[in-house]
Amino acid sequence: QAALPKGYTIRPLASDDYERGFLDVLSVLTVIGNISKAQFLVLIKLFFFTLERFFYLKAHNHEYFTLVIVSSEDRIVGAGTIFIERKFIRNTGLVGHIEDIAVDKNQQGKKLGLRIIQALKYVGAKTGCYKVILDCSEKNVPFYEKCGFQRKEVEMAWYC
Ligand code: ACO
Image (cartoon, rainbow, N blue to C red; front, top):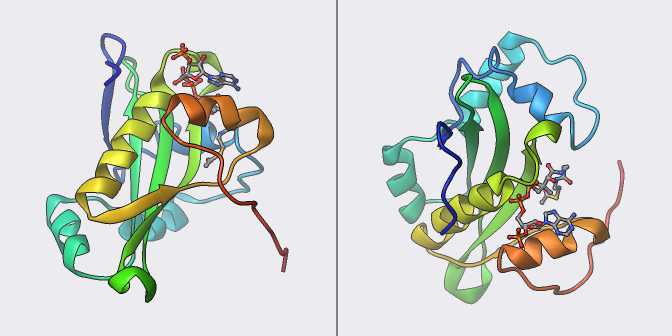
């Protein structure tokens, strides 16, 4: 397991992370748009992570968990989400989908991305997923291979 650099912490996304630059970090992924604090607070109810929800998830249907990494300056420098999907197949098995992994441009290369993925894989394994999957660009394949993933199948997309 990789250790975080000194002074950094990893924890679930919190309702005051709007002010800590959570959305700024996501801008390394794509266009974010103008998301108000009110909109953020509505979404965070969906993404909020507590121990109770963790155990609820073990017995129930799909859930989202977002984790963030906070720097020693109390800024969000990394983020990632796991979405747990309940299947009909595999004895109504669970599949974890890793989404929206983002590390601030100035903080990349410090193993923060690896640490986020390790934490999300742990959540997936502990909630009983039989696999954890994700889609990524060709250029990110080496990163995910370092995180223990292997190439499988092909992503298809349909834009509404
Ligand atoms: N090519 C080759 N190796 C890479 C790459 C790359 N593009 N990125 C990281 N690695 C390697 C690192 O060198 C390191 O290897 P090492 O252990 O041998 O030293 C290992 O992967 C871990 O790297 P980290 O330091 O943890 O990576 P970082 O913190 O920079 O995060 C990330 C990687 C998340 C891809 C970051 O660069 C980023 O935010 N990029 C822009 C947004 C993005 O593309 N996000 C992923 C979208 S896909 C999805 O969300 C499912």
